[in-house]
Length: 88
Image 1 (cartoon, helix red, strand yellow):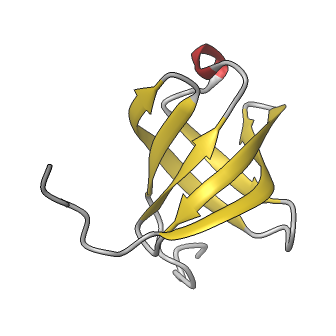
Image 2 (image 1 turned 180 degrees about the vertical axis):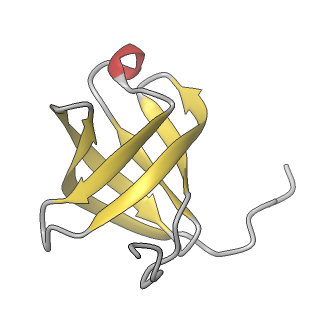
């Protein structure tokens, strides 16, 4: 299978949270790149198509959208870039 990602993903194992509409679900961040990430969750059926990923380590927040789901792993694309000034 050919690699289609623009950025290499860094393997990682950190606690994070899926946050959407006032609800929060724990997850494990498995890999990350500037463009996206993969997370493991207990039940992917409860993860919305768009949500905020909150990193437990430093409380950083990224807006995400689901790209793919395989069993309990979810591939994400970040819909913002780090440092975007889009908060005007």
